[in-house]
Length: 545
Image (cartoon, rainbow, N blue to C red; front, side, top):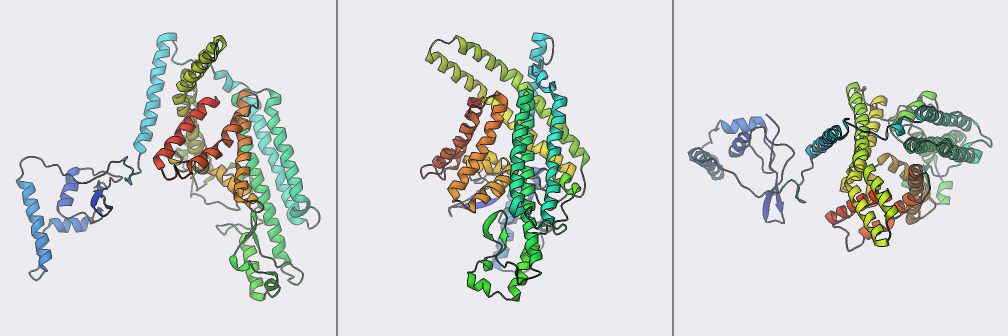
């Protein structure tokens, strides 16, 4: 029998018992009615077990010495069942319920709308093909095909060289872990790594501009470049922290000359592993053997993976590094949770979905974006007054609102659901929550946390948390947004071939918007804030383009 049910009683304000919609409907409504009539629903609206229901249907005799309340309940049930059988016209049962979209509803399963989204896109493609076939004799007319095929071989070779060049940090870290002189991490190691990253980033950012690639190739290369840069930074600085932690642990073999300061937790230099270690200098001087043992345990714990199978420096191998490069994460750990095996059929579906989304984005651009931009460019050149210019701009932006919203959703799906999901299948990476319910965001700060969790984790770990060790929370937040805004401006510069500041301005504009949305006038108004979030999102996408 299908899992039911359609009711979930709740008490609102102590007055009315409102029934909530549930995630599953009964396969046969008559079954639910029979269960309800026979007492097959618990007081909280959940179904009783089948054994309880079947026993109720068999009308178990009531013992003569049963309390009067039991006899009354049994008599009421029999009377209701008799009334149901005597009615000639079908009865509709009414109760105090809330709808699926009601703010008080706990219903959250809207997968049908996801299916409807794809059906709508399929209808769009079919109607476009039929219109093109009627007008041109060809089902599709893709003028952007040259953008995808040009520079493709050079792009592939350059991308491979870019990723391969990061492998230099592995022998560098082997040197840091073994060297007790000037090349240890806290002396010249960190400086060497930082200088290497600066020159590495500057060279590969300039490379597409020097080669004069198409904007599509350049955007792909830049996005991959930024992801690999964050991976390299996380690998380098986390292993640098581990090398110093291991050195401190080894120094404790000679406790008389070793430092007994509290163990630091990366990347916050002022956050201790345990509260008991935050004591004054006099108490640290009086540490006994138990405290020393505890410090050793803290340092050894830091050197071991969360799953307990790998310890530093056993991770400094080529296999571990290559596996990390392919894992869909930007934060390095000694070990990740894994699935038992790769689901090859699921990998095939996700790979197919990647190309399908790219095809849909191309069709949407060809039919609903490029013609509008071409027409508006001609009209803007012939405009003779500010009012004409403003009217053309407003009409163009309003026409592009819906196409850009659809393209944005497709970009989100192709990256966070299908590409990252495919790499998760390849590497058996078990943690596949690459995003949360960002569509319910009430401000841009919440959106930045939930729509791109790998990047959010990186910025929280290596930018915000590292800054919090020296700066206040507002300043650390501004620095985090500033670095993110620079990355957005770089991507926009790859599209327009110029650094105009649009991406940087749009990103930094989120901070005052967040302050307004968290003010006492609109704070707590979830629906209003979500509407404002979506309006700013859609308008921003159209205006930047």
